[in-house]
Image 1 (spheres, rainbow, N blue to C red):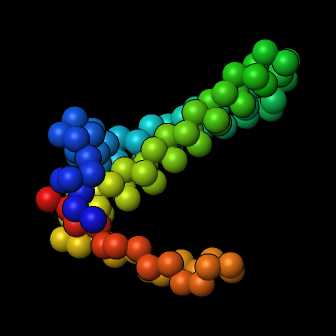
Image 2 (cartoon, helix red, strand yellow):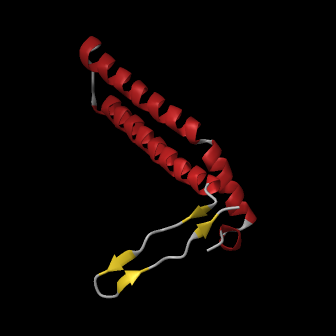
Length: 108
């Protein structure tokens, strides 16, 4: 399957931009987790005033870091798709139908 035929030019530009941002996504994930842990350590050990609101902020920061890490994973996959001349997907076996070979994906 040719990616040029499957994806519109806008979708191809989106994939290229996302692949270029993989380092930014990883850095954002690391910063989110470090800020959340710092906030947690400060309010539990130093100030000893952790309440429900502060705990909620910490959880939101950790979830944000997880989301950025997932975006980084997708960006790495997009960059591999862009760089590989041919991306082949192995046969997937379905119990009822037997092997199901998939066509190869080609990038630009």
